[in-house]
Structures are given as C-alpha cells and as structure tokens.
Length: 525
Image (tube, rainbow, N blue to C red; front, side, top):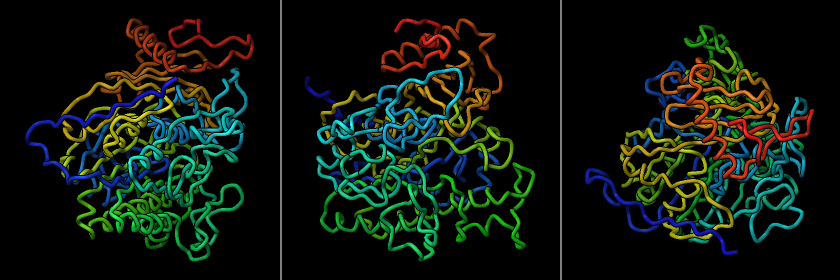
C-alpha cells in the first residue's frame, strides 16, 4: 500500500498590508515547548482581558515574543503530556495514534487502577519510527513517519534538547535519534525530572535526566543547563549555513517545584515568607513561590534564545520561533488555592481534566517578514496542527507519511491573523490519570468535543454528558445538558462520528464485559 501523501503547497498571501516576503531560503525553526504550562501561567494575557494570574507572574520575554508575532488565544493540546507529544511529531489525533496516557515502562499502562471500567488497551509503548521499529517496539505502539526525520530529509540539522517522552523505556522510539534528530541532549523516556538541581544530579534512578553530567554538582539549574546546551548546539549549523530545527523542550514547569533561587526572591517578602497574592488573598505558599520561579526561569531561557539570535541579525531574520505548552497547568496538590478553580482561572480544571483548564495552552508564533507583530488570532489550533505547520514553514512540499495526518497547517493564520477558520476539536482520553479520577472536576475516562461556543464532555464511567457554552461561560459552571436536549443530541452524534472515524477504542463495562455505549448512546462498533 502506498504511503499517504501530505500536500503542503505554499499558503496564499493575505491582504497587501501583510509583512513583506521573508528572506529567501528555508527558515530556521525553534520550537520552544514548555511542560505543564497553563494558559494563564504568564504575564501575557491569553484571554479577552488581563487576569490576576497574569499579574502574579513575570514573563517579559514572552511579552517580547508576542510583540514580534501572533498570539493564539485559543490553542489546545491533550490533557497530559505523551499524547500531545505523539500528536506533535505525527500529526495524528490522539484517538488515532492511541498513545492516550503518559508513557514510561515497556508494555505497562500508567492508568490508576480501580473503577467500574475495563480500560481499553492503549499504546503505552508510544511512537515508534517506521523503517526502524523492531517487532519488540511495535507491541502496543504506533509506528509512524516522525516529524524530525522529515525535516532532516528536507535538509535541516535537527536538534532535540530537553524532554522527549515519545516512547517507553527499552524501545527504539525512546531514543530521539531514531526519530530523526541528529542531536539529542538530555532526551529520554522519562516525563519529568527527579530534580532540577545540579547538586542533586538532576535526579536519580529512572528519573535521572541524562546527558548533563558536566553540570552536575555545579549548582546549575536544569532550565539553565538545557538553554546553554541548546544554544551551543545550533552554532555548528549556523556556521555551516545549514537550516536548523531546534526543539527546545523544557522539563519546566513540571513537578517537582524545586527552588530556582535566581528568581524565587521576587515572590517572597524580605523575611522569606511568600508574597501576598491578590487572587488568593493570601501569601503565596512555598510551592507557589517555586512554581512562579520555575516560570520565570523558563522565560529567562526564552530571553537567552532571543538574545542569541538578535546578536546575529542575519540568523534572526531567518528564524521562526514557536512557543507552546503540552497541556494545561497543574491544578491539584501541591498547588495552592481552590483546586481546579484558581490555578487556571478563569478556566476550570487543570492537567488531566476534560475542562478547558486541562487543555487550553499558550501559543505564540514569531516569523520575521511573515507574522505581523503584536497581533492575535482567535482561530482554534490543536497540537497536531503543528506537524503540517512546521513542514509548511520548512517548504517541505509533498511528503509521504505512513500515518494519516489529522492536523492542518496554521501558516495561513500566521500570515493573516484576522482569518477565522472553523476548527472542531476532539479529545479522547479513555484512561484513568494517576493525578485524580474526580469526574465532578472533569477527570477520569472521557471524550470531548469543542465546536463553536459549545464544549461537550462525555464521561465513560458514569455515562454522563455535560454541555457548556464556553463563549459565555469559560469557567464551565452552567451545565446546559438538561435544558438543551436537541443540541446535546446533535453534538453527541458529531463526537461519536468523529471518534469512530479516528478508530477510537471504547472501555468495557466491568460488570457485563460489553463496550460502554458511544456518547450518542449507540452501541454498534
């Protein structure tokens, strides 16, 4: 069977007022990915108005980047890390690639046990590279043509620095180099660091961050070490005149909330207590102080990247920077405040949750000569859209992939942010996240649809539908399911049709052994 052909013809230019054509040749691409960063974990407003959370954090370099590019106020990802990263490097929706929860050990699901469901088998061995995957690799895995290989084949020097988390330990996909990265720095199968502290060797055992031995014992914070290594790694392609793809994938701001002492004093009073916070109407806890310092340290890394490029104007003019997170911000312990209310306010929920706080993320795209600076787009973007977007930016043309690509390039929206492109978004998480299973707050096995102003949630264990008008109710407080039965039925059918089309798996009822009905109540496959 021939491989699917993904056509990436150059997008048409918008109105004449748009920026001039960028410098000739393929641009360098920096993908700056932050772990567990919510859409409000920044001083840059991603809602219709600034919020108290925007006032808590200091991210001047994100502000600089937003002034240089397009801020996407409705960008989304999966509710936890591995599904988003699998979608990013394959272009597939989570229901299709089936890497629906976070991965770690070979053939070992990470779901919390219990409940009244038999969870479906999912691809806990992650993404494996076509042409290099062994039979050992392909068990409970998705074999695909990965993004870094396609960029490498297009002439790019491909560099990963930081968190990979594409596949399980002991598989080919756990090594970023098998996926097409020419250089891999500190990337492995782990989803978080044992420690951010050099004096603690960046963790031990399974959660030791590898490849940074020269920084161990030096007091260098992990975020800083990764930034130094990333900038050193792009020196060679710059000197050789080769375009580069730098995937700077920070472990920050994932737990543990170790103290980045370069920045935490700004969030404490002179006597060492947490600074008063207006949103919480209380002093910041030690965890919140360290969380804020992690964010500012991440922002400092972004500033270092910008400064490095600005010192080389010819390189800066030819470099695209994309800033994004892999899921919503953490909203349960050790976070302070009302869990699932304060941490991603005004959105409800957080990482692992079906509510918007679990899936809404910051996205900024700065592309000299293409992206109008200081603008924003209200078009919806999903994480799998970055796969065709990066290939489009690279001028890769028509590429063959083993997998079906669900994502759509957002380059037209970067060129003309005033365009409004309809984008229904579907989530599929038939899993039990180990952080929480409180369905009242959106956790547990769920599928969801966002179309227009309506957000439909379906929880597989209680077989419950909820419906919110997030245009008027971003905090998802008023469930419309009891009062809008016709709309509920229509959207449930739409979600069901999408899940079937993507090959989604269903949990089984533990008592009967039968598949739980689809969101629309139907039972046929």
